[in-house]
Structure formats: structure tokens, C-alpha cells
Image (cartoon, rainbow, N blue to C red; front, side, top):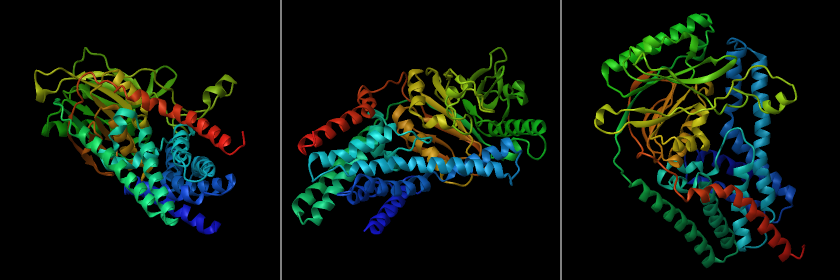
Amino acid sequence: MFSRSGGVCVLAGGVFVVSHPPVGLWPLVFLALIPPMLVTRGRSWWGGFGFGYLYGLVIEGGGTYWIGGTITEYHRVYMTSGDSGSLWSSLFGWTVFAAWWLGAAGLWGLWGGLLTMRRGRTAFSFAWPVVTLVSLDAWYPRIFPWNVGAAVIEFPALAQPAYWFGTSVLTVLTVVVAGWLALGWELARGQDWRRAQRAILAAIATISVWAAVGEWRLGDESRAPKLRVGYVQSNISLEEKHGVDQGFEASQIAVFRQLVDLSADLLSREECDLLVWPEGMFFVGALDPDAVRALGVPVIVGTGGDIVPNKHQNLALLVTPDPAERIRVYAKRFLLVFGERFPFTGWLSALGVQLPGGLAAGEHTLPFDVYASSAEGTPAIRCGVSICFEGILEATGDHLVRDRSQVHINITEDLWYGRSSAPTQHLTLVALRAIESGVPVARVANGGISASIDRFGRFLELIPLGERATGVFELPAAPPNPTRPWLRWFGRLVPWLAPFAFCVLWLRRKRSSGLG
């Protein structure tokens, strides 16, 4: 019995993975959540934990297998000057992944254990899977913010509630639908056909109402000027960027010249209001501001270095054509663990332990105004900047709205991920945050995937992975002075309400079973 149920959990974990990007068979996410709800009934807590953990090993392994290779590549280039046979880089990268994998699967193990507390087919039994998974999804510590409901980004109408309630509501609605379907299956097995039919119809009605509300929002065609954002997807290799073959200083100058030449070629063919270069293309010492100003348009420059003494930072610079205007600086605020920072460095520093390497986090955002020349006479369009991983964080959306940004410029370097599923996952999570913030995104990546995404999470244009390309995104800006919907306060309370509901349901169960 265990092997059969275990096999079902393994299969369901695989279905969960393919329901999310890059495969994106989103309807399967509802089916993938059903088996853990079924096989854990009547089990001991540890039995349920085991089934959930096995399920989680497949999900986290199949969804984030690229973490080991990414960390290996990062440390190979930075720490061993591109030594492809570096045992240290490989050992470090895959050890970190193994720790992450085994730890992340614990979320699903805990869910499986908690599912065993259900009894019968009561309201408690139905609400319990939702409350427990939402609580775990919100609070379980994770390096990569993988959201259970993220699969529905493949069908933008289903993802629109994230605008009003935040992305956590997508997990709620996904598990609710799966719960109705699981209940229908159990009732059908007990030959209670009428109630089984009602449960399945409830699942269909939930999805239908959900999609109808989303379609209503998608019909909001508020008139806004289009910002023409020039992109340079240079596809320069990591080895070339970091001087593995020809020496560091020479490579930096060569990369800078390539970006200038690609930009000049683009501007000879098309006009744009803002030009964007990808993340971390060269260190700041190789920057020639006059060569950038000569391009004749404002340029976002992805670089790195010590603008502030003794603080090495991941930077985005805004260089305008006006020599009298100072270069504006944005330093990445949220650093990626095991790449740009080590965990617990603050605590270790307080204890007098200093770890080598790592970057310093920035403290300020960089809102700036750009005039859309294609819509003369309109007010300037306010833009905000994020770097790489920051684009998938709720905090970034908060900052964009606070700064009244109408366009989100996200620069990134996804060559660290190789030809894995990570670039697609990264991109689609950015799209999910575009819905949540209500701010469209112009995303520029060195090796791809560069994209323009409207404020409804729809991809307007995609530049494939691994291609060298330049062009212009015509991106409709968000309406001026964006604000948070008041319902978002409820969405923000969900991670706090779920543990509260957890306690209430638990106490009611104890009282009804005579254990109190």
C-alpha cells in the first residue's frame, strides 16, 4: 500500500512541475494537489509527513534543480577564473542545492502531516488543506519564492485577483478548487453520486467566477502613453564579461565598446525614449560616460563596483545626454543568497565573524522621469528600476507603487542558469508581480529572455534565450499615480489570518473529539 501511494505522490509531484513554467500545463495544478489530500487520510502524522515529503522531493527537485548548476557557474567564474574542472565550485554548488532540496521538501512534508488531522467530510476537512498550505506557503523559509498558485500566470484571466489581494490569493483559490475535486472523488468512490456532482460543479463554478472577474479587469483599457524602451540583448558570454580568456581589464573595455556599438546601431534604425543595458555587464571603472551620453538618449547601465568606498555593489546607473546632469545610481537592495551574500551574515558579523566576499545592499530606490516623444504634450512617465531577482519580490512592487512608477525597468543576467528552466520561471514570476503591482515591465537580459509585459501580466514581446538582438519595446505605461486597491489589505492579512484559522480549527477539532 505504501509503495502504491508513494508512487501516486511521485507522479503527482511530476504533474505539479509540468503545470508550472516552462511547460506551463496550468490546468494540471488543480489535479496535482489532489493525491496528497487523498493518500494521507487515516494515516499517522509521520505517515502523512512521509508521503508529503516524497511529493515535495519531486516538486522541488524538478522545479529548482538548476540551483546547483547556477551556484557552481557563479563561483566557477568569480572564484576560479573560469576553471571548468573546479572541484570546489561543483562541490559547493551541489551541496547548497542538496541542502535546499531536502529542506524545501519539508514544506510539503509538513503539509502531508497536517492533512492527517482531517476527519470525515466536514467543513473542517475541506478548509484544513487550504489553511495549512497557505500558512506554509507564506511562512516556510525558502531561497526562491515559489508560489503554489503561480501556474495560473499561463492564463492571465485567472491571475488577475493577485492585483486586488496579492499573489497569496492564487494559492488560496488553487487549493480550494483542488479541495472540491478531491471531495468529489471521495464522494464518488462512496457512490454518493449526487453530492460528488455538486462538489465537481462547485470546482467548475469557482474557476468560472474567478476567470470572469479576471476577464473583466483585462477589459480595462485605460488610455496611457506608450514608452519606447530600447533593449540591448548582447548575449556576451560570462567568460568574456569577466576576463577569463583575455584578461580582466581588456575584457571590460571590450564589453563596454560592444554595448556602445550595438546601441548606436539600434538608434540608427529606430527611435526610443530610454535605452536599457543588462545587469552587471562590466565594472564601473570601464565606464566612459561621454561615450554613453553621445548616444543622445537616457541610458540605464548595468554595472558593478565601488561607487561608495569599500562597498562593492550591483549597480544600475542612469546616464542622461546632458553633461551637466549627475549620473544617478541605484544599488541592488535585495541580494541573492549564496551568490551575492551569505545567509546570517548580520548575525555572524555581530559575533565578530567576517565572511569573505559578498556584496553590499543598497538603501534607496531610483525613480526617474522620461518623456515619451511619441506622445508629445503628455506628462513625463515615471520609471522605477530593479535588478535581477528583485523583480519577483513583493517588496519591489511596494516600492514601485510608493514611488508612483508607471513603468518597471528590470535588468538581469540569466546566463548563470544555463539552458535550464530557470530563465522562464524567473520571467513568469516577474509577470505575476506586474499584475500584483499594476506596473508594466520592460525586462532586459544579457542572454535573454528579454521581454515587455503589460500591467495585466501579458507578454507583449519576447526575445528568445541565447540570441543577440536589439530593438524597441513599445510599452503602455500604467495610469499616473498608481495606488494599492483597498482590498490588498485583506490579501496582506492572509498570511496572518491563516495561522489564526489554523489554531481555531485545531481547537475545534480537539473539543469535538473530546481531547480538550
